[in-house]
Image (tube, rainbow, N blue to C red):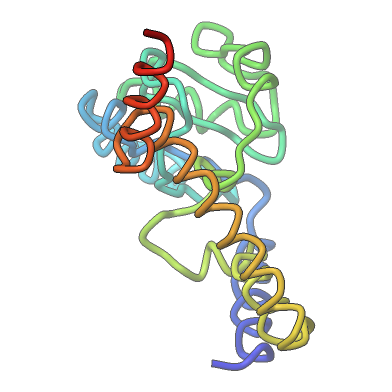
Length: 195
């Protein structure tokens, strides 16, 4: 696959998503799924279709607070709903573009603002079973940079530095834990010196 092909995939997904005024992201993480978020998603699809509003209902990965699940995030307004049931689907669909459903709305900014998502930065925003969603959110950009913009020498140099750091870290951990032969011998020698 080429860079151009990845960009085409990203643009096609973005163009498809641009057809909708709203995105309704339904958490399908284990905690929310155990509380029937799959049935909630099905009811939201029906309610959105019945309302005639332009909204896309997407299943997503874990949104991060299972105790408040099932969670639903409405974009672009960034309205987060908690403890949403299938029976609430019509109210959520009716609220699109208007006032949020106050009984379901929650503000977890104090919980989420303290977190820095690195690996899971797109969780709650993409369908984990659709790689095109990830590509549309600039997934694989670091890989593309490594393959195209970085020289072979800088790649190998960076890799060697990271590998050396990792080896030093592992060795120091083993010594601290007394798991290496050398670390154990040092421990024995220190014990003899103390006598």
